[in-house]
Image (cartoon, rainbow, N blue to C red; front, top):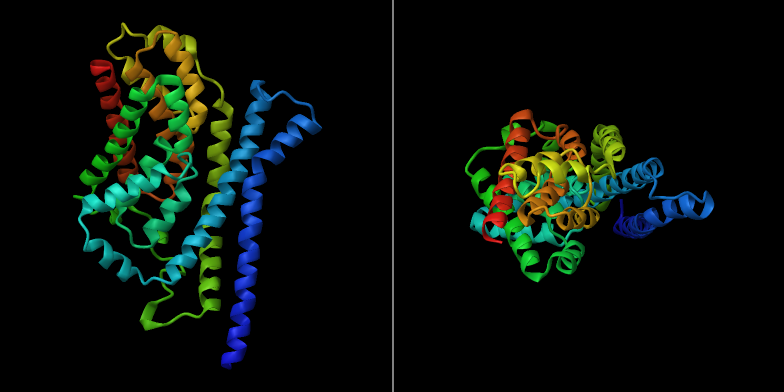
Length: 346
């Protein structure tokens, strides 16, 4: 292939990539609008109804996560084709682990994803050779803290409680990452995450062309998407069934201020539910006004957004049972400690 032909091919590919990125961004931005229009404007349905709300939630969230899965895996795959994995590892090895963990937590804080939506980025980071403890820190921080939740929290619970929530959430993510960094975790990750077409692209000193990079990113996206899409539908489907089902009377009775185990009950009860930080705040406010202690409310919020059954189902395809149990157990324990701390000092 001549230089002119190669340049023409690269320009054509670059234009197609730009067009595809624009189309993906438009679909992602319009996703919620489309479903709202269909349900409310066209069908005249009430989204506050439990059944209608569950169906709307399922269609919107499934579309969102599948779009993220395809778009983020492809984008990170393209980025990884420009970087040799050993360079990424060398860069990180030259930095204190604390710096990497803080950066991962801050990146999580500025990415407004729910627990399931963070997983495509998590897969890409792991495949890029970023230490697993760092990527798990991101996975914890991303759903716990985001700019929308901070604004709503400040309006509902006050600035002091909001600052404490943010610092404790980021602190828990960093501390868990620091503890996990002491162990060899790669053995508890499914091998397909490391053996993707992009990971093999630089083998034997091969310098890939733009066509090679695009083909490898497409193949990797198709491979991971094919493994995970059905679990996305299953996980979000379970989340949709219980979406909006929040037994406030149960919490008022069994997780009230007089129960010393209220934080534990609120944390365990929040895990099966599925919502993002912004969506759970109105529920938390209702529980707070019923007299639930601040720490108990915070534990419920954190468990709902950072640990969910749909997230467990998705992560089970990536992490082996031992690491999955360590991840969920350590995050749940940290959330309980935060709740007890709030109740003790608030």
